[in-house]
Amino acid sequence: MRKLFSKRPSPSMIVAMIALIAAAGGTAYAATKITYKGLDKDARNKVLPIGKAKTTGECDPVDANYVDCGSVKIKQSEAFPRRTMIVADGTFSTNGASSRGECRLEVDNSGAAVNNAFAKLGDTQGHAVPNYHAGWGLNTITAPLGGARTYSVKCNEQEGNIKYHDIQISAIGIRG
Image (cartoon, rainbow, N blue to C red; front, side, top):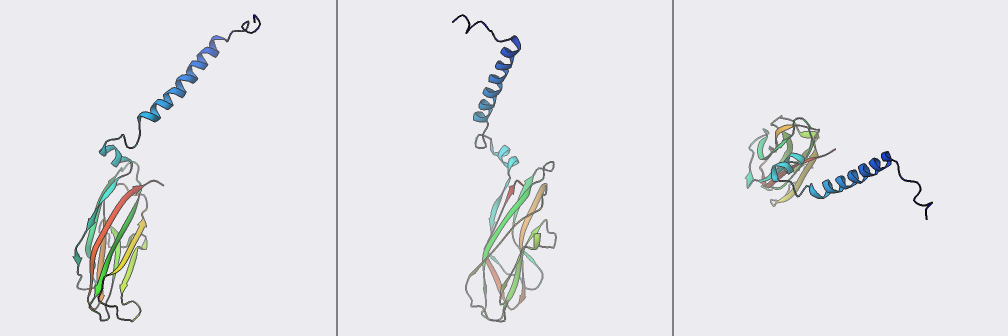
C-alpha cells in the first residue's frame, strides 16, 4: 500500500489537471448557456436574417416592360456578407388567346435576373393556354451580399393578356 502512494504528482501535473478540468467544464457551461433560441430577436437576425414574406393580389403588366409584382427586404452584415436564398411563387391566367409573359427575380432593381432566375409563362409553345390559375415558381441562391437589399419579382406581358396572381416572395440569409 505504501508503494501505491509513494509517487506524488508533480506541481506542474496538478496545475495541468486543474486547467484541463476548468477548460472542459467551461466549454460545457458555454454550450448549455448560449443557444440560438436563447438569443433575442435582433441577435438571431444578425446570425441568419429572414426577410418577411410579401404577398400581392394581382399584377397586370401591360407591355414588355417589367413591373414590380412583389418584393422583400433583408439586411445582412456588411462585414460578413452572406448568400441569400430567394423563393417566389404564384399563379397566372390568360384570356385564352395566345398570351405569354415572363417573371424574374431581381436584386435592388438591377434590371437583370439574379443568376438567370426567370420563368417564361403562358403560351410559350404556340398553343393557347386556358384561362385558369396555373402555378409557377422561382428560386435561387445569390452570391454573398452584405447590407440592406431588396429582392423583387418582376413580370412582363410579351403578347396577349396575361395576369399574375397571389405572388409570394421570401428571402433568408444562409451560410456557405
